[in-house]
Each structure stands twice: as C-alpha cells, then as structure tokens.
Length: 215
Image (cartoon, rainbow, N blue to C red; front, top):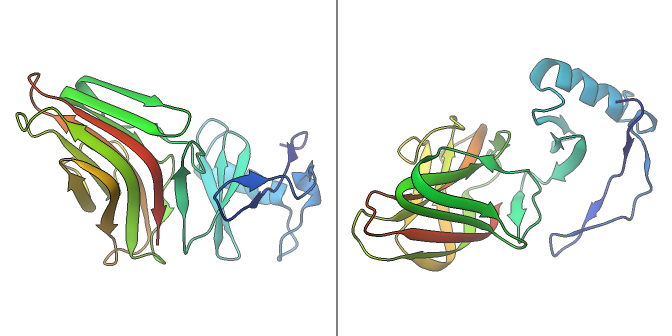
C-alpha cells in the first residue's frame, strides 16, 4: 500500500468525476481521528478484505469502497451504483445457469437469458438505511411469454443467489424506463443484484441496464 498513489476525485452533478483534487499518497491524507487513509484501508483489508476482494470503510458517515486499489466515495443518501458505464462499484458476475449472455458495454450492462439465468451483483454490501427506493433505468424486452422471461432488481444478504433468493425484489416482464424497488422496510447492508431469467429455449429476455441508484 505504501508505494501506491491515490487521487480523491470530485463527483459532478451528472455522475461523472473530475480530477479537481491533486494526486497524493494515501499516507499523506489524515482523517478526523488522526489516522491516515492508508492506515485505515490497510486495517480494513486485513480484517474484512484482501487485495483481490473488494472491501469498504466508513468515514464521517460516507462509505469509501475499495475496488482493486481504487477508492470510491458513495453518498449514503443518494448512492449511484452504476451510471451509463461508470461503475462506482465494480459489478461482478452473479448466479449463472443454462444459456445466456452478459456483458459490460460502453454505457450499459447487458443481460440475456434463453432457458437460463444471468446476473450481475455488487462486490460488497450497500447500506440501505438512508434510502427508501432502489431504482434502475432499464430497457427490457422479451420474445414471448413462454418460459416467463423476467428481469429482476434484487437486494439480498446472499450475493450468489438465484432470482428466487432475495430480501426485497421487483420484477419486469418488459419495460423501457425506471424500475423501482421499495426498500423502506430494510435497514443495514445488502448486496444489490440484477437478473435476467427465462425457463424456455423457445423464448428469450434481453435487458440493458443504464443506471442503478437509490433515493
């Protein structure tokens, strides 16, 4: 950690980042309790994560996520988890079975299912305590109703579960717009997952996910 430089980037209103703050070593950045960012990250990685597994620390009520050496600050009152190609958290491959496709495109996440299931999942749990609704801007289409092709927006304590495993879930059979999931009854941290599922090879479901955020 000691030989790595870090740059705290300011998030703009459109969700993108600029390089307003100068590059410095993590050892040079002090927090309110007098410890350095480097010390806090090293301590956390030693107890809850490794260099290859994402972790997070909370500083002054805001969460700093560690993804392969990169620090990302997420506002707990309006967390933007994905925004047209910007992965504020590096989404990983979730539950997978049968036939399907998933890919990270320039400005969206893509899922397809044909007699199978594909999913993406956040690398760490996200604190839902300060939000009431989780939203996804999506374009969901399906070939027919055969096999019940469905898109799912899920929060769960299980990062590897199928679409039937969740603490809260909202689904769509076809939508171009905003899918909203009520999470007002939940407090604490959960994984966020998105799934495409179809139970027949005579149909399919395609889903493009443009943005995922909480309000």
